Length: 121
Image (tube, rainbow, N blue to C red):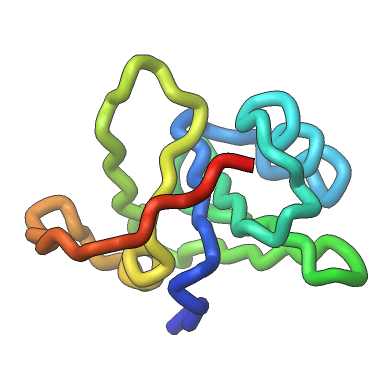
């Protein structure tokens, strides 16, 4: 199970990604598709077209890290809400763990929680 601090932002690509890309290719996708800085420390998640593989890219102060997983059987169940053709959606770090474990969370109910608003930079 993946354990991440709640302060970490997790951005998931909504379109399938060619996972033959490595550090440079994925970081270019983060900058061009997501409009985000790949060096910011956020977690960027990419699934392949068949949803049998996932790659996660992040910067850890000294370099890029990629964590990859390929399922032996089955698919990852990541269902996102269509919000006007966004290239990525943000999710909580706690939501990513069950998806990577192969749990279908489409019927799960999430209770609202108070969160402080982010200040614009």
